[in-house]
Length: 138
Image (cartoon, rainbow, N blue to C red; front, top):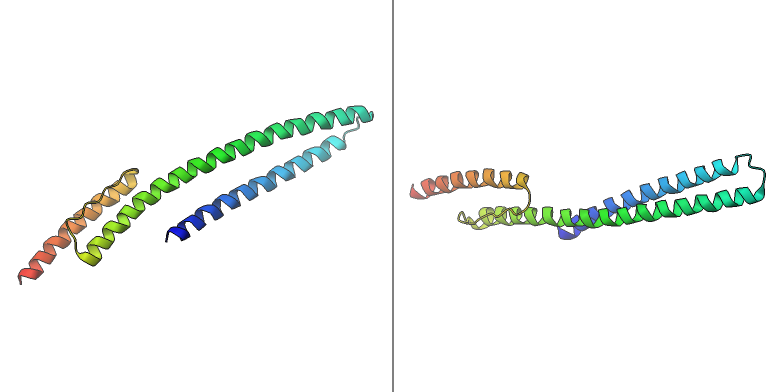
């Protein structure tokens, strides 16, 4: 299960990087084509313009890849926190369903949505425990 989660995360990140890299290259090529199609006349002016253009695109690409790297680590941290809460919910459900351990506690650490799910599950588990006690008395 963990390998499947990792594969989905990395495939999504790679698609994201690939699409933005493709758009980046296309915009660079179109911009360079536009500059070369300008009637500047003097080859020295064209060369100076292209040098400045390439320097600007180099700075843009450095900022882009820095932001992309920072975004990757932020998303990886969020993913780990979500999976930690999901794993605790999965473990709780397993304990209830397989071992009928109604006393098991569920601790959600990060997200309110998972906490709301946990409260609902605890209410259901209380009802199941009461129903189980009634059926065992009969």
